[in-house]
Length: 297
Image (cartoon, rainbow, N blue to C red; front, side, top):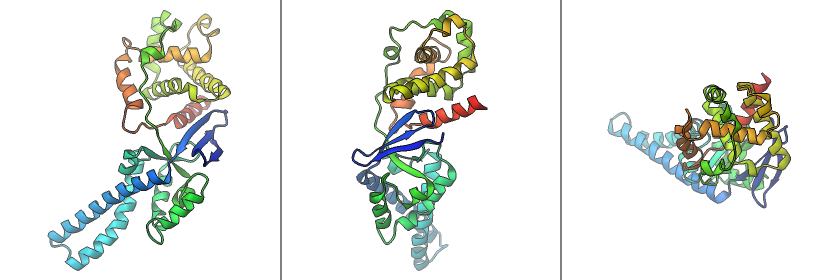
């Protein structure tokens, strides 16, 4: 997507990522208190893992007591790096501590987080810890306009705080809107068949978050989405030509998620996954980027 960082205002700790299409996504940067608390939880997990491994090997007679102590120290650093890499990669930018505090690591430009970024930020964790208690990383983070420690700067990542989103009422979201797409049930059925689960999630997120976008960005986003879905199924011109792009996407969401349709039975579960989990993952920027690459392919 190649988004540009706009602002970086530390007064309100908000980071705005603006895509080349003019769509702006706003994020709340994680503060030092929440990051330290999440770090404390993760350090506890690492210590427990290292101690358990060392004690287990000692009891098994594989290590002497003195060697076990040294192994525990070495194991702490190895496990701390491995723990961060495995958790952040497999859990999409989250460790146990970050999940509890509703934090997530993401690419600084709004793109999908990549493995080399996760590896880099965790390998440099040992440098951020110098001389002790993450002093170097803490100072760098305080001086950085985007609250990045050395590992984040090298990897091109940021840590954001994700507020809990209240699960929307789908019936209320779509209430009072006549859906002309339903006048063509065979085409609506084809749309449900051809739209992937990822595309369905994307349009649902876009519709729910539409009020967060700037007016011009909102128009651009829904124009791109409408263009994509019109390539999946061609509805009659008299239906789509006079229909605003946002209304078209609203109708698409109605077809894909409303109860009583082929995919409607999963609507409540999908909404729960997006908005009612302990730590919902905001993937709209990366998903939108993937969609544009598909359209341009």
